[in-house]
Image (tube, rainbow, N blue to C red; front, side):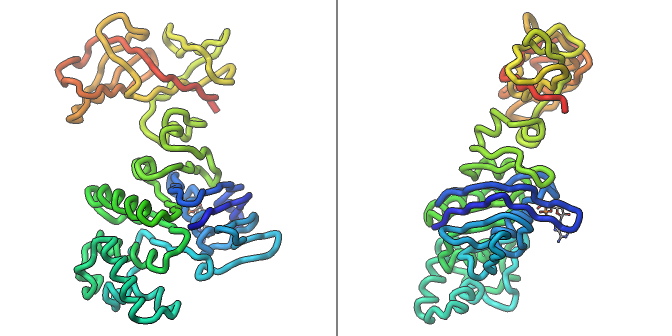
Length: 348
Ligand code: ATP
């Protein structure tokens, strides 16, 4: 299995800097996701690791091998990088059976037929397609085709598996069950994985660490819990989970919530104008004695929770109460809010 090291990597397409000074070490056997909105540079980053795209600047190492270096003018093509890759479009060959598809990388490596079939069958068992070897892709569901692609990516036992939005074409239920399948295969093989997704739930559920990107720049690298509870900036707070942003002003080491009398200790380095952020599930709502007085304007029943909107001064605050009874609070009612785990950011 392989460690991946990315050092000061840039990718420019003419005037567009798609990836701007990317630095990351993925440890041996680790599952790391690159997460961000459309166009943030995550696919380009993965394609540079794979060798489908050449970095404009910087160095990439897979295991002990330097596979891309602008200073040494070195570039190893994808087929010599010891990687397996799975794309959003399943990219299985329609004219080949499942067995032929999965056997293909071994055929290229001139693995003898008997050994080839043994390894293909082992791999098909691993992805639960043992019974489907003779079928053609058009005789399979999307989820099954994606498992063929996964088996084909893994059959040559690469040190590194690269996955680019592999679940995006699947329906929500299948997507969720495939998360667990991919994870259990990764654990069974102990393989290093770099996984690209725009789906924060997927990244949070699957990864040891998440790299959050925006506009070509890495915003934060951390364990899912760390990124959720301690986001480095407003972009990360907004992209991961739900958050209320409110305007505030810092004075005497306290942050005053604009349009109200409420204040919080300034735990940040921010001075002057500040943005106060609090997640909807970190707000308690009651009928009396809270920090902030507001008016309940809307209620949305979610089954396991109720999602409320409360007007507080100039702010429309979202409050999610788990296990709540829809009838507990009524529209137009005066309520009191208490904030926990308040985050404070620079307004810029
Ligand atoms: P998505 O989720 O939509 O695939 P992404 O985060 O993977 O987005 P990239 O595909 O890496 O983003 O693209 C990053 C930026 O680089 C975008 O602005 C994109 O338009 C640009 N870009 C990507 N490939 C090329 C190319 N071959 N030529 C010119 N610009 C490109």
